[in-house]
Image: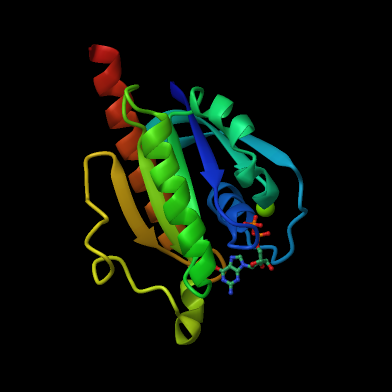
Length: 180
Ligand code: GDP
Ligand code: MG
């Protein structure tokens, strides 16, 4: 068994963090989710035909601002998923700040893989954040940075695909670090 791989999910309240995690782990969409302070999900699942143990920590929106608490957890996680909503410009600003904060906090420690994930793609007619690729060039694609969009509510395969790509990336980085 590989892992456990520990992922942390951050982002403004209401962007769909819990919906995404629940969708990925259970394939179900509930539409209303409890606003718990912090939820930890532990599952093992098959990634590229390898049994992989996964722990996902889902922190409520309020906690994101409590940087001290998050700073501590940063040293324990292998990858961070930063979620925003494509229909909420402010949530994208929050997400950018978190990504910059992550890049600062981890220096000079080894780089932590980050997935910047735009959710609620089903609401394309209300989009206010541009699609990846068309947006600002300051988002440097790097070995440890991925950016995708998906919809927790109507695209189970898309969510699965994005999470799987990120888990693959995280295990590659982890394997690489272990070899050092
Ligand atoms: P969190 O605070 O980031 O954990 O957000 P939640 O998972 O609680 O979701 C907040 C609200 O957004 C809920 O009413 C969800 O039903 C809704 N939501 C989540 N994902 C999507 C999505 O992909 N599309 C749409 N239309 N609504 C979504
Ligand atoms: Mg939540």
